[in-house]
Length: 169
Image (tube, one colour):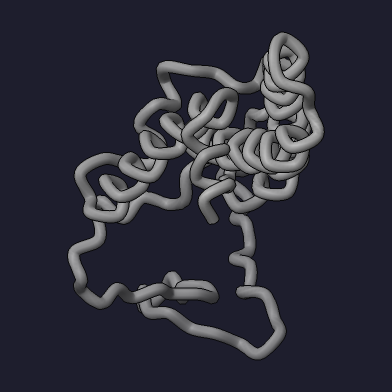
């Protein structure tokens, strides 16, 4: 456990550890109701990065978690075999680059599968809903009595046109 904690507090994982703390605090604020998960959608556009179709916060959170996991795993696996000195520093820089690349690719795949959970258009508005029961009438209205009337499987009868009237456009 000490090795994992040391790797999380060392370079390159510390970059993603701090970002992960920010992400966790943000999602806690969303859970409490202080902010909204789509609050940064107007500020950033991830379509150019291939991560469009979900809120920016979801894509950034997924990328942060994946990058943290890859950098932590790479550091734990490669530090014991890397020689000390400049070689270890170069390996850690390579782990940082590989973590970013894998996180970006993995987030793109994840976003494609999550896209159907976040529709492009919002659902129907409930702003006019007052909680009252509404009457929905189907069928046709009898023009003589102005009352709803339904015949089983037949269309309403047509009124014959009078010879002196012009047809309705």
